[in-house]
Every structure is written in structure tokens, then in C-alpha cells.
Image 1: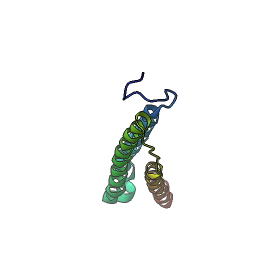
Image 2: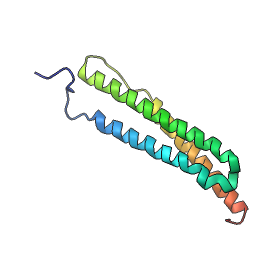
Image 3: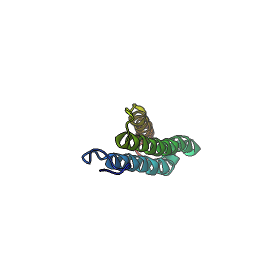
Length: 116
């Protein structure tokens, strides 16, 4: 007989998925911290705003990913029929789009100043 905390199907690996989301959040966090350093000459103090949004988004991605893991684990060890919503992928997409917009702004500013 299996223990109450044992997943009913060993082939399902919510731990791996959770770790993947943690790595994604960590990557976004690192990029968010790098934005002011990379953008300071082009944007000045305004570079702190997108950096802060990206860092907060990365932290939110981490928290939402942990909640998703707990719900998935509870659903696999119990009888609840939890279904994933699209919040986690949507959050990751929005943070990625924000980083892309910041990168495009930096490229446009660098092109306008002669590649400085």
C-alpha cells in the first residue's frame, strides 16, 4: 500500500516542472538585476523602473510556481481534481515581453547615438 504523500503515478514528475519554473524565475530575476547596469547610460534613473517590475515579476513567478507545485502534489496524492489555469505561463510571458521591450528600447537608443 502507498503512503498518503506518495504520488499515485511515479511517471508524473511535478518536482521537475517546479524546478523548471524556479530556474525561469531565477533567470528573470538575474536579468532584472542586470537591466540598470546595461541601461543606465541610455535611460538613466528610469532604468530602475523596468528593473523593479521584472524583479517583482520574477518573485511573483517563483511564488505562483510554488503554489502550483503544492496544488499539483495535493491533487496527485489525494482525490481532488485540480486543473491548472494559465496564470503561471501568462506571468512568465509578460515578464519576458517586458524584458524584450527594454532590450528594443536600448537597441533603438544605441542606434540613435551612433552605437555608443
